[in-house]
Image 1: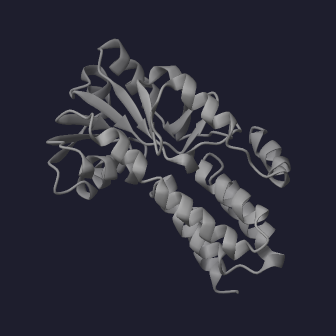
Image 2: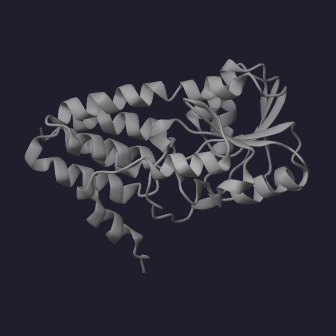
Length: 258
C-alpha cells in the first residue's frame, strides 16, 4: 500500500517520541506493508532508530511470523504487557522523583504511584523536559536545568526510561550516566522502567544524543516480572533473541558512521 510509506517516513523522522510510542506506531504501519516491501520498511525503521530495542523486537516478530500482520499484532500485545513494569516500580517510589528526557513508561509509573512532585531535567539537546512536565499532569511537575539536577539530585529517587536494555548497559538520552552516577554517590536510588520489548541480546549501535549506561549504576530495573538486579537484567537481555535475518543489518549499523 503506497499510502503507508509517508507514515513510515514520519516514524523514521520522529525525534521526540519515546521508544515505546515509536514502536507502537511502527507496528500499526507495518500491518499495511506488502510482503515484497517488508524488508525495505524494516530497514527504514531500524536505520533511523538503531538504538531502539522495541523496533528490533518488532522486526524479529514480523520476520518470524508466517503472516507479517500476525507478527505485528503479536508484538502489540507484547508491548501492551510492558505496562506492568510501571506497576512493579510504582509501589516503592517516594514522594519526589527526578527524571531525564521523555518517557511514556516513566509517565505511566508516575500515574500509578503516589508521587507528589516530578522534577524533569531540561534534557538538552532537545529539551524534552518541557514536554515531559506537561505530559505528567495532573502530577505536580517542574523543569530543572541539567547541571543543577546532576549536581544536587534534588529528589528522593531517580527514575528513567530506556530505549534498550542490553547485556552491557541501558541505552538512554545523554547525561543519563552522569545523573545515575551522581545519584549513586549521594545514596539516592536510581531505577529504570523497561518492559520486555526493551530487552535485546545485541549491543545496539548508539549515537548522540543517546548513550549506553553501565547497568551497575542502577539500583534496579523495573520489568513486567518485577524488579531485577543489574546482573539479572543483563542475563534477561542475553535471552532476548533476534531473528538471524537481522544479523547483517546489526553488523552494518555497528560500523561507526563517518
